[in-house]
Length: 398
Image 1: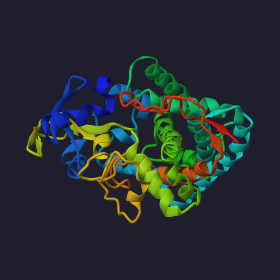
Image 2: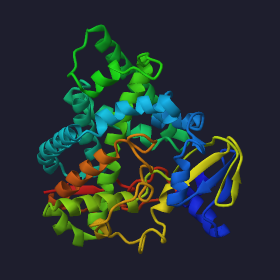
Image 3: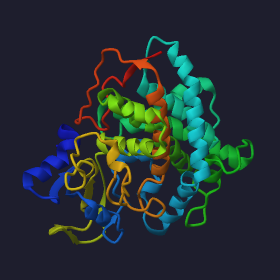
């Protein structure tokens, strides 16, 4: 049913049963669907739900990579997660990456204006992929960037489907894991020099909870877990353009560069538009939540899209209103497009702070960009996971 209904699968099931917590099945396995801040808190408690062994092989082989931090629990997860926190949550690191992406965007605008039109999704992915590779210490020539961007996008685009998109994702991951594993080996052998403190340097030198360095392929997986989600901000850039086309009254205020409004706009884009439909794990033991018994090893699924459109949490949730996030303290288990809880210690994405900073900066640039919108399909199918603006947002840049 999830393949047929997409993002509506779990919300429809909850509405049909009149419950927040519903029994279901996923991939033939027994599962329980949850929604709400208390459900998110429950899911992120390792006494209740574990990640080890929970990720289906097709998701590991495309989106996250086998052996990734997302599949670990306990001390192994905490030690590996600390590596990402050191890279992605320090202010100087975030600020430096945002500056590099913005500079690359500004350089690209002149070239975009010389083209008859651009597909913003693809153009943004190239800008971000090139900048994050260079920030991370990954050597990449200008003529290689488009191929790297395509592969990073493919890993995200094919994780929740069968057919051509899925097999493109598998091929892309195999290609880029080999590329980065060779880079890590070169750094360790001293034949390749990278910037001290860069992502490549940190991952190549990292020692896990067992005191051992990461096997080169796993190190490549974790480097991709820096490059891939950063490049995936292209989804939100395209959604931001979609929002400015549909609700142009936000454009002037965003273009004025007011930091609080830019951040509020970024949060609303992440809340309003579909990205990940749900996240999950497996029950650590026989447990109970909201009156529903959950057997050990059953899948426990948190409805991200449903919670981000919950009327009990968000006034008029299907209206796009950035101002809802002005002067609003966001709870750790409230707005969850990239998971919930503490990103420093739990399974919430440690790159979320970077995503917000990057999207805030690029949304302002986008609002200031002079462009025309030719006739195109701006539809967003909720049956497609991950959803995308159908034509990628075609612009004629002036």
